[in-house]
Image (cartoon, rainbow, N blue to C red):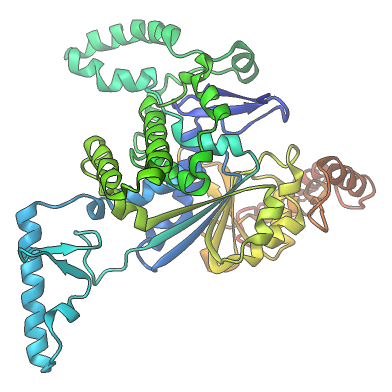
Length: 487
């Protein structure tokens, strides 16, 4: 039986509540907003992307994939020019110009090689048109980063369902997009907006009563706080579906998954077009195709289907830029099977009290081994215990600052001190050295959750360190005013 429940967070994206762990997978204030603000924006991708050929990313605790979806969206938005076909004549004359330039270069260097061998990245048709086998708008002199994203999670059902979840329009988005166009009069707009706001919140999608009461869910009326850029690219879910089909084949949409997709309570959280696409592609790719071997026919149908919906995106070219791999197992076991070095890591496990096995010194040590010298490990946690776990593994630490509130909303860990923009203060480092900072241990990465908690409780009880309360009092007594000193 399913132990989790979907609900709409305040930015219109979907969060999950686990009854077993009595915890949420995402912030009730906005699952998608959290992914952007706490993981994507602080990652420094703007400096990393297209500066090296391959970029490896590790997403620990994939869940329903918001961090990965936001990452894919960032990549596609960043390289939108690469994914959007140019005007045909403009492309054609650019290719002609490239060929002429190469001919001139050949003559200058007095080389005997043919144009075909020099222009090895292109294929010529019988009519003489140049057909690029790569993205047409890519300049061959530029570096185009290829992303390899490894996703770890223990819940196979959630992984399979992740690409189908949709994001709805919140009442405040409707007001900002529609109402101002209807009402030109400023005063009239605000009077009617106030009345419509109450009505919209009454008819907005409701959640099961239990989750609503537990989380005090409601749409945030202050629409100015919602960032319009925090969206999932229309193509991201298709990439995930294709990757899951590559992994599971005809075992992707099993009878149990299809039954779940038909449940009335569950359907309101799903995108029908994405579900239909997955069913279509699975049926034809593995049933019809395997029997009749009509690959070319289905290949054309497949790309035609995508191009009808998203004619601005070059489906096959985007798949060359982004590769997704899914590892369904206890993350402690999965990490031991990975031999890559990662440029970026997202650690988005349940809180340390709910999932202590993923916050132990030993597990973080495995992440440290697999992080590149200038890589970043990012997490939403700001607790002294989690930060001290990083410190015990020789990480340099920094904090993620919310630009709106100027408060810390996450932690960044790195091997290279120069990668840290906002280091922890001496006060925050001091908290890590109190009893509150005593970490979890799991020597062989095999202990149960209860055992890990019990061992830490024993260490806490018999520790001679200051409590966090004693530390804060001693700071006040000494009247130390250098909390902003960098570490």
